[in-house]
Image 1 (cartoon, rainbow, N blue to C red):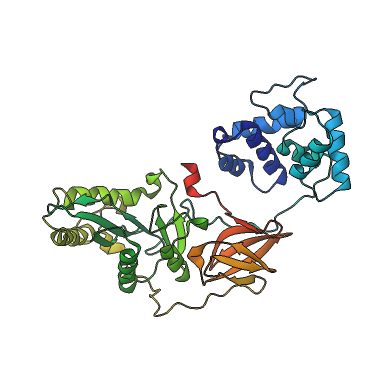
Image 2 (image 1 turned 60 degrees about the vertical axis):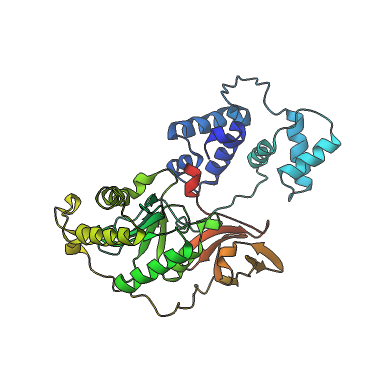
Length: 392
């Protein structure tokens, strides 16, 4: 999260703590914190030279800094931690503030750094790294059906006053427009129906790229929606662009510009007649219009249906033998040693897999997709990736 959105001091303290965990490279760490690499290196250098006081905004700490945590508070913090090794910074501060009425107690984040510097915090090392859940685009398609993209073009009114929401689905390798359908509303049920038709006609892709809007995504854990859960059940990988970055789906945006120019200006008299225009547009776009990006060939010359056909029924989900498997209840939770841990209602009734990646830390999977990180101490699940919208 960019530092201007939170306390600058707390953000820098967290950055240093994350750097000392040695999980991410400096480039990745700076990207996750929304800062430049130069700022990252300067922050680490100030901390190494001045300690926590060097992280204060604009700090150029002199040798005798009045903002440093005094020797007496540090001694009290360390002594209490040694008596209670399981107590965290917040608990320690609460006890010390009650016992010693003084005004120079540091923030909990500074206490965490003091404990670490004194060797009172056990290092946690992640044994395995997993790719983040849905995602900033990474796939560069090498053949047809490696990657599809989907989006709703901006709605417009036909001349009878009804709204039309064009749903477009395209193959990113060949630019083949698989579907262009004018819906009366961008509904989940209607989108399901169009994808069933497209999957039945063209087979299944390896991955689908979308934005973060409904019905492709939601505000649930990992942005899962009922539609994207179905895609995962079909063995399709999810990719999502960042909020406010339509250029990450630039090829699809280009389809929409051409569609708007050639098939929606002016709009047709009715939605039915508008759909007839869309069908004609798709025929021309795929079979007649040469594409410069394809070396002036038409998409139909490069596209072939996928060999992965739509199954008549969904197969049972299987996880590796070393995974812990739990089933999500109708309330959206799973059971962990007698405790109900909330996950998301979107996965109600589905099995999830948990793989331990550190002592008491588990990566939560749905099908092949990592969707969260579970801490069995706090009984909470958090996302394993920076949600795309957090970059907005």
